[in-house]
Image (tube, rainbow, N blue to C red):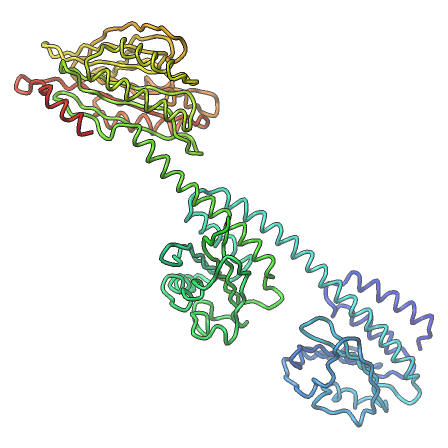
Length: 600
């Protein structure tokens, strides 16, 4: 027998258990035992219902029972709908003989007790279901007191369930926030559009959904980019739906900038690839599909379609999907803007460099250009090869300080000024002096370095090199025997002082020798330990003995790019290999050289 003081202690212990419980079923012993100890109570039965009057769970325990009878089922009982509470818990009292089996599945247990009546309480647990707690009592029971204790126990159960849901929401919110943060990091780590979209799909499955489709909006409609699914065997079917399904294409085409996440299920999926067996089929839970529009900076950039085969309480809410879509859209839009900028910069960079180098008997000319800045500002490196009136060829290479529009403007001015002067036959020193004067007259705020080398074949098969430098790294010569020599040159940077003269230095090439001009992006590439590529350049160049000009240029640029752990400067190389001229070759006529130059 439990008096009021004993019941108060039991109720207190029940509240304590409720604060620790991870599921309501864990409270059963703490609820049933004190109720069964109440005078006149012989049996306690608890039930759990879905909102559509489907019985999911029933637990019965008698006062003299050793173990409860537990029934897990999915029995549809439409008649039980009359017992479903609308709001507050509902307490009822009824003789056992008047119980309707269609509404009271507990009746099979309650009739077995010697009690004459039943006190029951039905109550809502959440929006998706409700529960009942009933006791069989005999004539000696204080039914009002039993009803009061039953209502108090129900209060604890409801509070426990609410707390569990709240803790679950908080845990889910924390997990969602962590997922969104990780998604942002993953998506922002790539500036490639398709790679960013594939990352979106990989991040979402299985954390958000069982399947994911990502489309990019193009001028002619949605373009499938990526898909993933937790079931490998369903991956291909999902990809095919993303590429070719007209139902999905029509749905995505209807989405606009103001749309929030759209959820579809049941009849709304009729005619779709997700209805019945299909890309998302095979699970025991009904298929649910959501579509989130990706919009950034006032325009739609694509969409994410999620496919779910999981319980309803594990579906993400619209707010989470909208937040994920916003982050994905910004990452995709940034990648798109980067791609547009990249094309624009590369196009401008191409116009600042010669489209091709001239062909001349005995010469093998090649060049390489590596963009080093990840932000893709236009660099200031330039080079050219210019046929001259006397039959020689002038090579020039330079580097404007800094990047961006101003550097590009000076690059164009420097290259075209030097090219024009050298085509007219101006000697290298005078050409550099006149460029310096032009820079000073233009009020240029940046300095630049440059080196000009004229290459004139001699009758003995060698080549006379005349080199003039304005603060530029010294060219190297790879001799036919693999030895490396440095071309002596030096002079003041361009654009610093008004009147500057530049001295010329002479050297020579023999057949099989290779002249290498480069910008400081090559030599200043640096390993993590601080070693500069300049220190290994002679050895790397010597190892290329016997290679043609294209291989030398491309190999050195590639090696420097692989070598460097730091440094973002562009790398420009201009390579000239002298193969020599046979008596039958002769030099190309001046008219031919000038005609080739005009075609560039």
